[in-house]
Image (cartoon, rainbow, N blue to C red; front, top):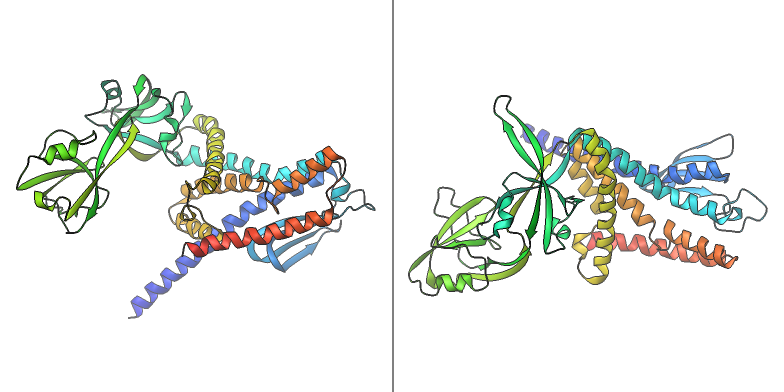
Length: 437
């Protein structure tokens, strides 16, 4: 009983420790963001009243000789760099925020996101050079793939498609826009004498994209186990690769044609990655105990695994900037998907979800922590530049309008817009987390 209590206590403390570390990581990125505003403000001669990490009541503060207050606040979410005269005209103080020239204010507002992006690049270089990156690896090329595509080999790391580096942030299919493509792969070669693997850069031209059909298990009424010793249970979504060890099914109607003249017991071969499982069922179960659906897709006829591969410092240097650019585009695609319906609420997360995911990744090793910091840093940079009230992007829009019109929008109106925007933004983020519970 005591051992069980100690084990539970250790588990709880470990979870608390991971959550606290996740909060430290998130606050570190907020610190970088606000340091960007602070540094630009100091260089350009703005008066700064307070530099705060966290929100809510102060739990620590120190006033510097120049009057600036450095504070740590109770709620470990967010932070701010408060400038003199930020929400008013500040006519009596030449160092007030709104007395500064528009180009100076734009630099200060942009610098928070800029520091996040620069920190993502620097941390990304460390992460890639020390721990490598995730690559899409060809597991094998299917029998039905066009002959030109058979030039790919199992073990090839997909390095570039049409000259563009491939990053597996969501799905590599987004790189396959054209019907004919050039793949650059890193092909492994094993030196048997030294037992080391070296990679040769190989360029394959003329790869084609075709339309295929997968027959997948759509619904299972009766539990069915595979014929081998593993006794794997047939699952929804399983890919029916062959029937009675016949031809591979890859065209519309192949499945129905393969079973239409069969009677009695039939064998379904399911493909899961590179493994095959045979399931013997009576044909009478088709459409009743087991239902199937044909799913059309466009591809080149290959299986893909995702592997971590070490890379050199030089490759890390040239890889990190386009990688951060891809992360930024992924953020924008996700936000755009919310408006088009392509992305659902379950695909995004608010602060609680972010802390939860971060705490889980913290337990998987320092390399993954660094990669996560890169992702969240770029995310924070892009998000803050959006023209949404209460964010830096909206403030920049106000400054640009003032610069063009030579007259500011009423400061009180700006304050109301930002205040209401902040409440709505916090409410939406919390609502997203609540809906995911």
